[in-house]
Image 1 (spheres, rainbow, N blue to C red):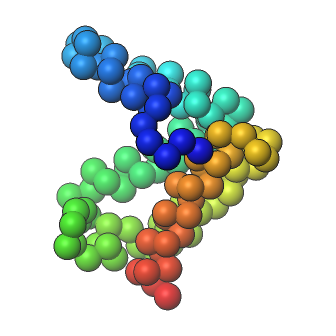
Image 2 (image 1 turned 90 degrees about the vertical axis):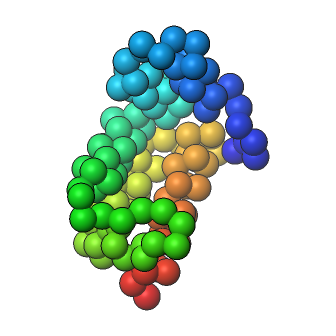
Length: 116
């Protein structure tokens, strides 16, 4: 997995900077498809799940905020299941598997910090 931004991750932002009228949903869908391949539908489900949570008015985000106010224990557990499904959709050893694993590790850390 790259340790710094790559054209893979900067592509959507660069396209949007060049043309702010582009449809961000299409850019995100294109990024997910090209980055995650066979796991794209599962990764899309992860992003959709997180988006549903993030737009809830009672959810708090940001530095210094109580992470427990962002996701419930059940939501974390469901999210970890979605990550397991995404990892299972791609072969071991590739970029997609590593990226999904890194994201899952971050979510698992937040879960353990919040509820264990």
